[in-house]
Image 1 (tube, one colour):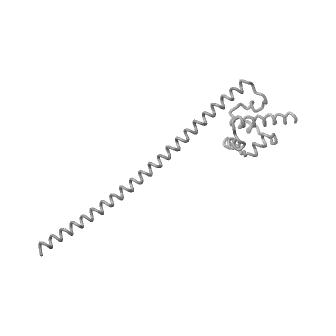
Image 2 (tube, rainbow, N blue to C red):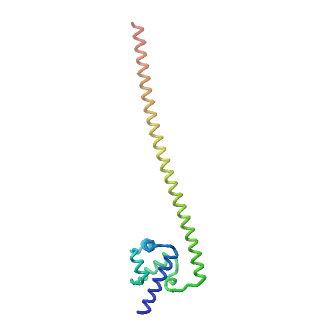
Image 3 (spheres, rainbow, N blue to C red):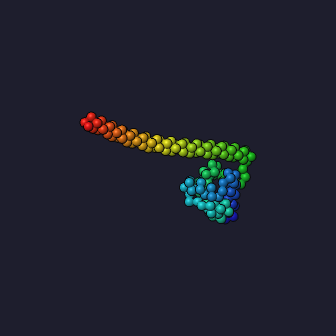
Length: 160
């Protein structure tokens, strides 16, 4: 039982270390684990990091996937300098990736906003064109009425 507790403590420490290296809150890790198909909450992360709850094998595998490390890396407390350097490089790449994703999302949002504004402008243009046509028809009716009135007046003057 002592070895089991030690292993759980090692995993707990590695989970906390990997989470903190990524500047993730416990809530963030819980959200990532939920997206991976596990019913995790912030309290689940806290208990896992405190080694106060048993960890299922599929959860260990899910944590490895979320952290993008091998399962074995969650089971050892010491890592080599080369592994630390590789992990740091991976974190830099991941940060750049997330920045690029953020920029793409911002650009996408700007495109959707511009599209909505364009559709509003087209709708307003169409409404104005319809109003213009109605006004032109009304003007034609008025001119027609005027013309008929002038013709009647002209005919009455000729008769009278």
